[in-house]
Image 1 (cartoon, rainbow, N blue to C red):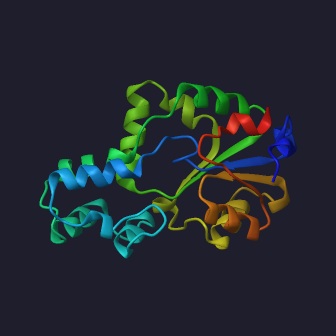
Image 2 (spheres, helix red, strand yellow; image 1 turned 120 degrees about the vertical axis):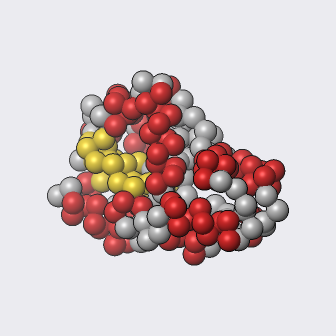
Length: 212
């Protein structure tokens, strides 16, 4: 799908659904793997990868287990660390949200309603929100969105078609009124299957590039 399709047309969509990690927030999955390897002997790479998660991470991401249960499960798997150490390793993948992106979504939300839809978990949510508040950016960021949906809190996640339909229904939207932007191809395919216009954001691309 050509980026030119969205040039100066944000206002043509009733809502734009944005992913968080990889679209707004910079991520480095390898940083979490390196952090665990530096602190423990368990084979973390066998448990976690961006494209294929074990059931443990699936359950954390959909709110089926608590952060405390997640930490205990990691310890049982050989990661003998305290809570703070585990959280520090797990959060290592979370990098920064550049000021230029915050500036742009602040502008974009004046042209179209923005919705955040993220596959994430409570440990990451807490760290992200704390970091934004420490920079004095949280109120500005959260104020850009009509709704903010985290998979661990709604018990639903991408790329399930039912998740997209639920978001549409919760906001009184029809699929044809919505643009979805995500950096994970299977999420984009799920959105398209649900009838949304969807764009697969490539590495190095910025959402500002899509609208001109």
